[in-house]
Image 1 (cartoon, rainbow, N blue to C red):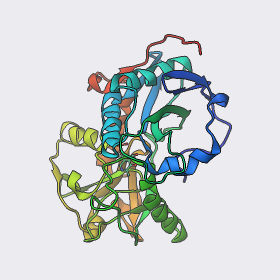
Image 2: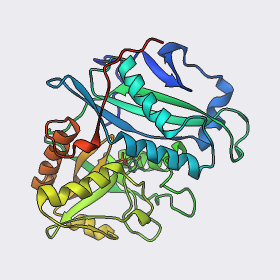
Image 3: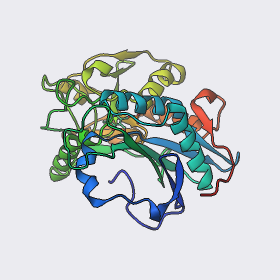
Image 4: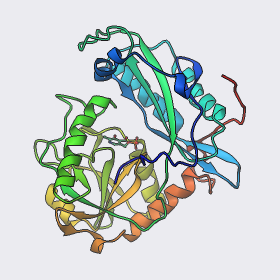
Length: 323
Ligand SMILES: Cc1ncc(COP(=O)(O)O)c(C=O)c1O
């Protein structure tokens, strides 16, 4: 039930990570212990996936440009600065994947943290940042019959007026974690967060959508959620693949219980069916037919099995870069 496996027995281990414009051997990428805690307060990051297609001998990075654009937006919103441009960071991702000779599915995490002022919690605006790009293997569960049990969390989602979820900041995951701990303590798997008015927002690391009365319905971006790239993808695919309209509107808690189908969507979780909310079964307690078709379409696109939406995939050049 963890997002990433903790086992050291993984089929692919990267040799390098990218730090401030250089490929650094994994074991040498250290920081001083005094910088860990405080620097993370204003840290922002991205979560990207690259999928290995063995037949094409290609590693496809999914919607890389949009992820790097969102990273730059997060950096702007926390008012930090970086010496690296959007294009340099984007190229850093591709260089890192090439240097690691990545022939596996990997998660990629570019992140920034304030290097100076290590004991200062109120990191001043304009502080220069280190940029690190980290990557590791993950196991996709796409195409498996699957489904998770959820609860509506008693913790309200952080919001625009306190800790804006639009900023992809590590600090926001304190709220997510409290919800996850609550779900586990109540014998469930994952939480769904409501805002302070009782309207559905998102999951701990994903957005949420429901199928009801022949429509795909999801809370709007102004509901205090991350501007999810998987959500954008699903909003494009639902009319194309399912032939149904998409509606961005508020969702009540009771509507969740009445959903024909419900799923989380996010880079890490891909399309993750929800089969229970607060002890009430959804879609008969199994992955629903529309969710299954979306899962298949998403799978085929991210893995490059179709030419549909070729524009969403970046190809990793097969150059080998020495450190
Ligand atoms: C809080 C939160 N919401 C939504 C998402 C989904 O965003 P994306 O589809 O861009 O990965 C994430 C992903 O990490 C997240 O952490």
